[in-house]
Length: 280
Image 1 (spheres, one colour):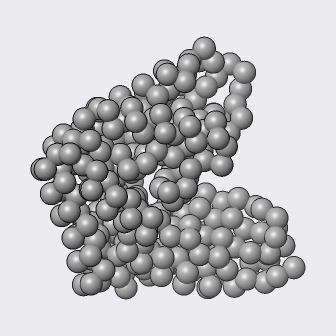
Image 2: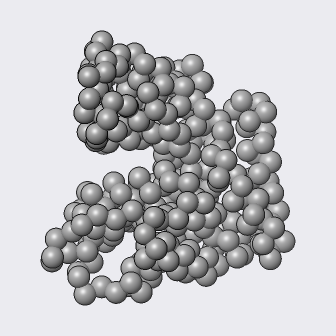
């Protein structure tokens, strides 16, 4: 049994909230450079160049890559041989978020009630997904999620008779209807299977995978490629100006489901799909 003080978790969350908002994941930055060179539209190529310059400026001046510094989503994998000490785990996570947003001078975007709309003032509470896994480590992933893209997401409860083409069309149609709202070129997370809430969680988790890392299963890796081609075939383009590149990547995560169902969720991520992982 290994003891982990929740103060370590709080500090790690605080630091990740700040750094994830200032620095784009290296794989995403690399992909932007690659697609800019392949974009045939002069206007969209210019837009992609401006996005790259924005990221460079954010790094140099230590300012957020986007004014929407997101609602904090935390995926926590806690080893079953870990004994958490020093306080409450979820409280520590939320204290870390509050600390990070305060010390990083990040915009606080969370309201305490969805209808009465009073800002909590510290970007808490976070959305926390916790799993108990083998081992004696704590793996934390922080994903600040902006709502320009989140608002364009969708869930559809297909029947088992749905084909791969039906699902691909749903993903492409979601991107087409989203248009410029999620700030394309986007990263798209697709969750397939589970139930209503599980497929949405899978889609969010898919956004935390590197854009240069295909699904481990060849079947789903090929499906990701077909979805990406379909989305880029919509012609939405960078920032909605038309062009070849609407999405930088489509990542799929899947889970077993009921014999009578086929849930599919599409979680839209913007060109600044931010996430960081740290292991304690």
